[in-house]
Image (cartoon, rainbow, N blue to C red):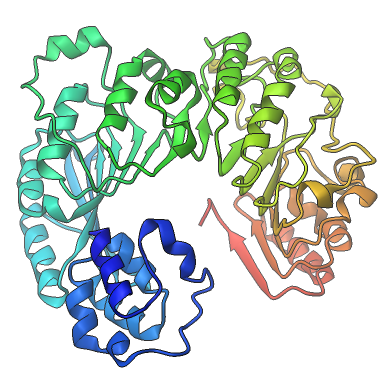
Amino acid sequence: MASLAAEAAHIFEAPSIIEGEKSNVSENSREISMEPEALSNALILRSIFRNLPFHDLEVCSNVNQVWRNEAELRMHQFNVQFFYSDMSYEETIIIQEVIGLQRDTKKYKLDFDDLIPTVKKALNRADRVRIALHMNRIDISNPKLIKFVKTFGHFVFRLNYEVSHLVSFQGFSNFVCKYLPNLEEMHMDEFWFGTPEEELALNDTPSHNKQLRELKMISFFKQEPPFEKRMGMCSDTFKGILDLAPNLETIECFPLERVDVLGETGKAKLVQGIQYPHHSAVMGHEVRSWLKKLANLKPCLKFFDLPRSPRMLPRNQFQLSKRELYSIMESSRKTLEHIVIFPTQKFNYLKYPSGMSAVRILELANESNYCENSRKEKYLEQMGISQKYRKPWRRFFPARVDLRKIFPNLEQIRILLEDIKPENFHLYFPFRTFQQFHVTQLYVNNEASTCLTELAKLFHYVTNLTVDITFLKVKGLEKAVEKMNGFLQLREIVLEIDSH
């Protein structure tokens, strides 16, 4: 498929859109000034675009307005959700229609008999449709699901797999290879294939031994799955999932406890982010051992969240792991875009590599992964986490540090601190340290919204401000809005409720 895009670009002397040469298409979608006549001929473009995968169509849409208009006619997306409802005790199907590149959507619930005519109607309007299939607590042998994938499985480009049914990996791989041959993305959000003994007990039919050659991206555990089940899965399960994609380009998120798999398969360079083992039975020295193995693989991460206590890495083990953490950031120095840090004053500070030029987002969080307050008390108690109060150590960086050398291209700061207030603001944000940042985007959570006046004095260049107002009462919201007046360069304000 990608060769067609390359051939078209060569014929018309247009920027190549093959994977290795995407940089030729400007990131800010600048238009080509001198266009050959054929390059803007609608009939020629239509005949070429008709055979391109959606991934390449999205790249084509960035060339110029003519290409964008033609690409939009080829792109019609549906998000189809199959899930088991605890309210009705039956399968529920919801379809969301995404039209063109504008992402105009309409969402409605359908009976299964209405689903097929709806998708067929879209096929009459566009050359092809693409379908994002979401499976939540639906058995892969569900008759309605099988009927749907038999009819439209070749249109499915993305699979979100969240299932609590016991199914073998053999059965799952047979399902995706047989019914979803053109799959481009697979998100294994919350799944469990069971132990090897349970796999044998299921007695599945033999595997087709097929692969998904269009599959370019896999992610694991975007949400937190049942910890005991996740830890019980063997390494062969993760190897099998990766082996489904011989042309894999990106592993968006991967479980740290299976880092050996990355070494054995040679796919460590594809990993963009790490998911930590949020499990009370995991010992700190185990996490440190996994971090050491990851550091030896020299990954090129795009997202990195420092392992915070108490569930990820106890304080004593964090102190011992500073060298490994530095090594992971050093190998990701040119790729790391988003980093999450917490106050490391207690540990005599964590050293960061100089020249992390790719970092655009710096997220400031608490040492604990979860706020230890009344809202989380019951959950933390179940996880075996002590509620004993400890005096916080609030500084992120030592007094004499040149942050411009560490984060030279920083654009956004995200503040997710639970106990910050105007009285202790200076402990978190020493003026001389943070005035070095000339960020234009700022995100603050509910607690940090009380410090907008102080933040406005510190970050003069902010043009885009996002405030989480999920737990703010009316008076608190009024005060927050009043404090926004201090941002003299402000152009856009986003008020966020439950991440929306």
